[in-house]
Length: 185
Image (cartoon, rainbow, N blue to C red; front, side):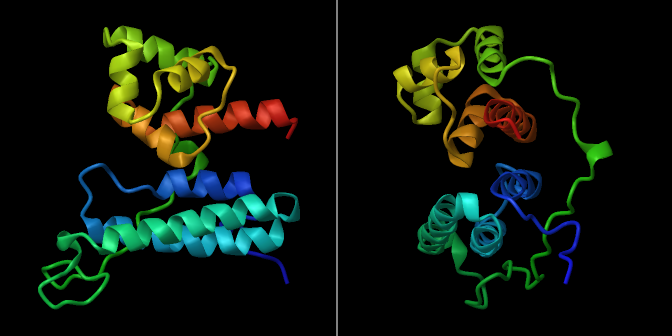
């Protein structure tokens, strides 16, 4: 039985799928809960398919599940009807459309860290300021910018994008491109 083309079969494909579906910054909590639940299911399925990254995929599945627990404790989560996954208007939440390759933004031909540094300098922000906005250590940000460390998670990439006012998808794809180049895939 062949899997659908849109079903991620590797951890990298799962990350790309997640980035493509990520809600906007101002999305309601219910949209984030639906996104995180779908990610938890997706990463659990990938753990069985991508045996070389089995434990990493299980980590991501558990991480997404914990994010759902955190989000559902927020007061905004409760709708007028008290039902999960329903906006206060009663409208069911629909997943965001997936982007195809033609819809993806063009990626600059630079390394992830160099792009971050250029974006930070373009905004005239210090390492300390961006690190504080992204809630990561200054030394971590410096290591990411110099290329001696990878961002490590979707959360860090999204936080850096938000701190710099950059497109999350572009940063995520740049980070993944660097990861796949380094791993030889």
